[in-house]
Length: 244
Image 1 (spheres, helix red, strand yellow):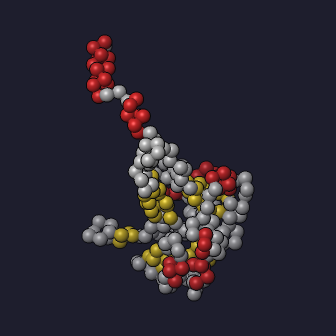
Image 2: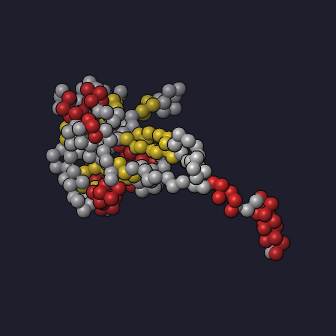
Image 3: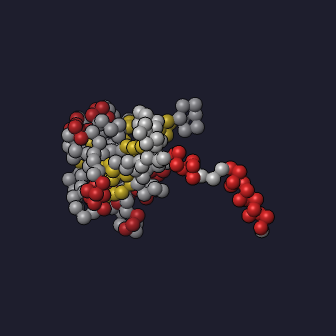
């Protein structure tokens, strides 16, 4: 079994609901060890986040296509980032105490806080910025794929998913077993050419990202020509009111 996430960058709206839900759930999670806040109402609020969203703007160099006159639209791409639960995780390799480990039964990468000494080696080894030091406890924190939730038999089957997946209003996040070719995550990756981030490092990240679809060109001149003028719209509204 190889558990992980599929994130649809074409659907993600960058609302940060996943990050907030993650922080709320793991703030009280015994497995994650908590996600503390520092001076939440002070002059320099900060804290530990297991999931962060990066925002990138994509646009063509020319604002308008010279041949067709179509407007080349820009597109904001939101990229949620958390632990990728890599198959060949350097964070595990560099850990001097064995606190970072990868579970054989499902591939989830975890941190044992009893063994972690807060040396930051794993954070330096992670190219995804997925690990953050808990300054209060002096140990490393990270995404656990909500391992305490996904195996909780007291919950309905539909709720045995990571908090970030359940909270996503756009349904841009999906959870499942990549070793099962018939699972939803495997099907999505096959259909949409999903890929892992920074494959050249050969860490073999389990999480996959579905690329944004190409934005169709819009002929703004044709739209403007077909659109009724303000006076025409106003006259139509007045006639409607008078008829009532």
